[in-house]
Image (cartoon, rainbow, N blue to C red; front, side, top):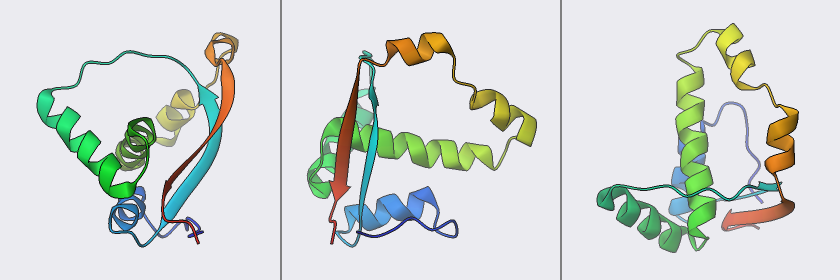
Length: 106
């Protein structure tokens, strides 16, 4: 498995997954959400998931990580801390623990 290093951006990690050079896995909680994607993004996400040989859900999580990683660079440390607040209500919404894998793991 390719390990994430602080000097490798989330975008570079996702590009490595898509090119078949790396993989990623995590354990998390699932929360059912419905989201409307513009057709272009729907196709883009589905194609990326096929290329990386992972679920669409896993690819959406990867894309969100890339965006959040980029956003953090534009925010103050105080705002980042506010974003990282986890409430009891949010914890209760998580209905089960899951594991997901994307890409090639050695």
